[in-house]
Image 1: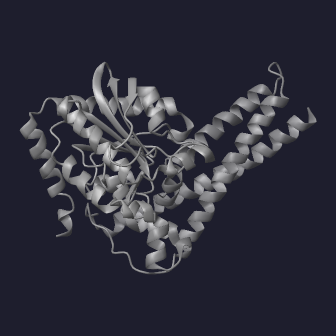
Image 2: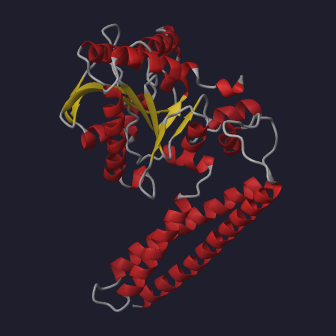
Image 3: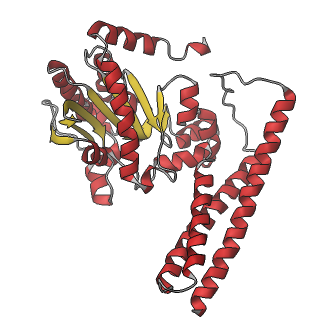
Length: 379
């Protein structure tokens, strides 16, 4: 009982600090909103400041430290609750106190995850427990039959392709796959496809076009594999050829960015009639670390680069580079794969129904117009 009492006391102290951090953030948000209203300057959608080499501000550093402190406190509170639950008998009178602390921690977690900055979303997009393509196949589809090999060189395990049924209707699935443990990640090449992977994907897409099956693409990759062997076998040509051929496929294509959408490695399978993004995923021409290394010769400034690149789902929807944001469970897709899949299922069902009503010519013309109009606000 002494251990339980001390744990509860420690948990209450951590809760007090977390409440103070949350109250401070809300106060700053109200002050910022009041300041913005006072200036009377409207925000112009689709505009962004140019990226210039400059040092991170003190405010950015303080926000980073504050957010890290909140995450540490939340993790510590969850460990305390688990320990308290183990020490306390279910009939103990302190069980109610533990339940109250658990509810408050859940509320603080919801508050934390609803106010993430760009760098924190990058970290969530890379979370090792985030659902991958094989998880979505298991949770959303039936009768999956995988396709192997590109009929030229080899089979690339970094990219999954195969036929399945979605609500009883036949579809073709294409997706990158990172792997969970070290052995799987090495086998899957950390989700970085080589030319044979992109050629396998295109072979599967042509098969889908032949049998009039919609194509569902799931992307979670840091980019195409940059090794010498991949370059020798025509990495750039494979990516470019995929982009051209996907624009001509006469069947509906729905692309979902589930984690990282990195550079040409993602774009090679991302030419779709609808491009969706999970709430905490990212989509960018370069990683924040790569951008920081180029702009500031310092990869440690990745947090500043993440903000400047506009790589989050909210930013990209505002810039009209994607079509829809798919919400995630309150604490992120990594915390509940089943709930994340259920939320994505609704979006896929709705978009498939809308695209199925279009004729082949209308589908291709809309896809052409969609990509021709991307980025016109910069002209």
